[in-house]
Image 1: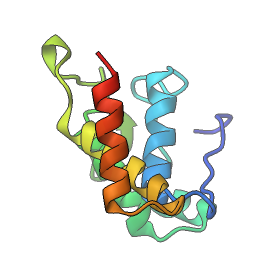
Image 2: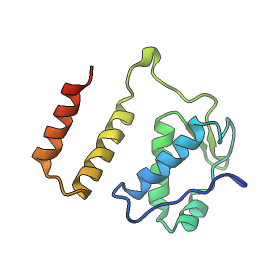
Image 3: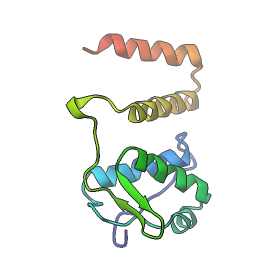
Length: 130
């Protein structure tokens, strides 16, 4: 990722660090900044650069691989996959849905909302959209 945008993790963001890393990398891949075959930094390198534990970066990479965005090979590093895999027919991706819900809950809790308020807000949004 030399010469590429820098990743950053914000301690003030209620989103867990692994999710901040995952989201930034997914955005770079989906926008084409990181193209097919581009190599991601080594786990230890990125963890050191961001001041994170290696396991935190490893989790972000595992989730990117599970989403079909990257491919990891022992000795070959982690590279952007040929084509990001998406379920056919526009179906939702369960992992993406889970991450979006998790991020919503983290942000709502950081704002001081309790479980009933979080669920009520979600119902209001679902009822207001087509």
